[in-house]
Image (cartoon, rainbow, N blue to C red):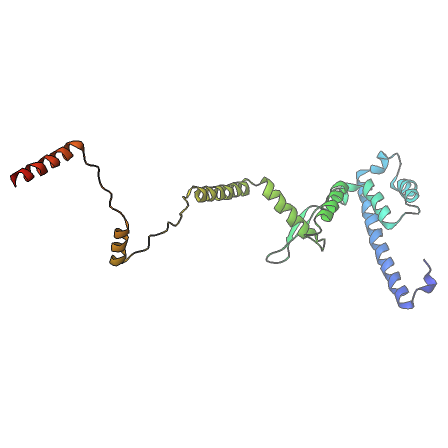
Amino acid sequence: MNLSQLPDRELLDKTKQLVSQERKMTVEVLWHLKAIETRRLYAVCGYSSLFEYAVKELLESMKNKSARECEKILLAKSPASTIPTEKQKPVSLTQTELRMVISDETLKNLERVRELLSHQNPEGSNGKLLELLLKMALEKLDPLQKEARAQKREMRKEHKRMQESEPSQKTQPQPTPTSPSEQGRSAEKTPLKREPISAHLRRQVLKRASDSMHLY
């Protein structure tokens, strides 16, 4: 970094920030060393004292390392003393702050899911991401939601069956009413249908006609 090109105000602010970070890191280092001394972990590592352990094990391993890398080294030496406990803290009437510790593998999977659901969570919010994941899990695992979906499917099927079983109501054409005069003309146009006369009846009629002629 070329500090000669840095503006005066920015140089002063940056220096204060680095001192603050160094002070915080120093406090963290001291707490770690205190925990290691209390547990005599330096002896487990093959050193006779905490001082020897700090010089040979820590200072040598932290050469040319970033602050983040040094922090990981300290955590590896005494991880249990720095891992915070899970915590839930209400911050409003409808919101709660949730603090937890996850593994690197879980964090990797979380980032992958964040990418897959980015269209539903464009801001990349952890809270929104957790809300989406819980909703998906409940839809798949919650028996109450499964039962509700099954009931909706049955209702749709029953409604469809009822629609299919109803007879189709076709409109039948109704005859056009006619006046009495039209009915009479229609009757005149329609020839009368005569029933055939049997042979026996024909002989009886002829016989009576013949008898009538003899009387005159």
